[in-house]
Length: 458
Ligand code: GTP
Ligand code: IMP
Ligand code: MG
View (cartoon, rainbow, N blue to C red):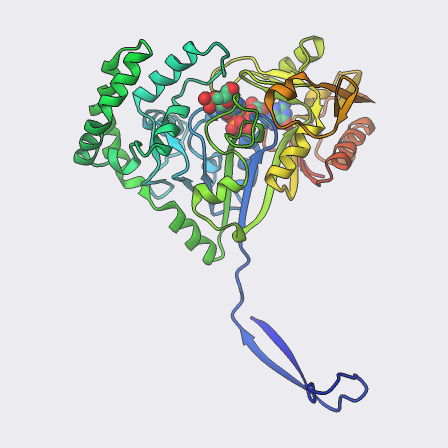
């Protein structure tokens, strides 16, 4: 029980003079305790694959709900727990704990991939029933024609994007174009067939025009209906669930996919994904007001990677890049493609801090820097004598700028078994402290390996 205290000054109509106040009335009455909102958002501060899956898994035990708000199975979140490695694409990374899991209506969902993931988890002893997972009725469904269009379109592009070919872009095109098929549609035979009848002819025409086989537009109908029947009990209203949970004082964690510079609005177009990956998108995608947010955590690697095309100013196509790729296991979780690797890029970090309003950061993969004699941090960019410390807005401009580095001494000690900041070698501590000073945001967590125990608070 909390109490509100109201001081009543007599003669307040007169000029307040503390010495002349004769009497102070103290009125005390109980007020209902206001539950503090606990709506935390986690997003990637770079180009994705920062290790959000691991950080979400680490935090999930403290939350009642973990929700995905954007993207689809282009995401690959890796969770390593009790000797097992889980590669999750759609199911939120809190799955190994008791949290309720939600897939919000801002996502695009391939139901076949979801079923595969539910089966994979069941094989590993985690049963995902409707009391555990909820899928919003309005979640966009990725259809076979989206995947076909994604690859056909990419094959025609002279400058490729490097899409994961999961149909993400075309599913979002249909969402925005109001031609989507939703979760509620595949859960109802008549709705689905009626909707497809309306949509299929334009998909057949589009596929034909790109040189593909139009039959794909009406393929897998029975399969989708079968899956729809199985998923029907999972259908929910995500916004309603989350708002109710927050009113009851429960804690909600929103799990981002991809990274801030892959954002469809603020990223490095055209080399971006088709959803909004920044923190504000969690509110829009889950139907929660921004006044409910208590924390926004940015996950950021101690270096940088990018998979697919697009500018990466600090990319190292040399032994350093090779070191980061091999030691960091930098191969795409979804596609297996080698990730491009480079030094930490402060201007890009500054931009993602602005885009997300981070309250703190989780620094991952510090262990990967072990063995590099000299470390570099890009602190600004330079082009023909012009120095800037914030990325230019356009991708083709960004691609022209050269990084300006500051150098630090590296360390040789392996970090994977360390359990606290103070145990880190001096140069590693200096590196972390410098990043924190440069970013002007607290580094709350430091990760030194893929496992749960390999994270500590700074
Ligand atoms: P997207 O949503 O696809 O952007 O992915 P993500 O941010 O969840 O990251 P992803 O799991 O694709 O990639 C991170 C990889 O690094 C995984 O293989 C993790 O197991 C691994 N990892 C995470 N943290 C650390 C760390 O501190 N050190 C090392 N060595 N590996 C880590
Ligand atoms: P799409 O979203 O599959 O169309 O891919 C568009 C761009 O985003 C490509 O450059 C992909 O490599 C990149 N991308 C998409 N999802 C991820 C991810 O989860 N991690 C890293 N990059 C991604
Ligand atoms: Mg990934």
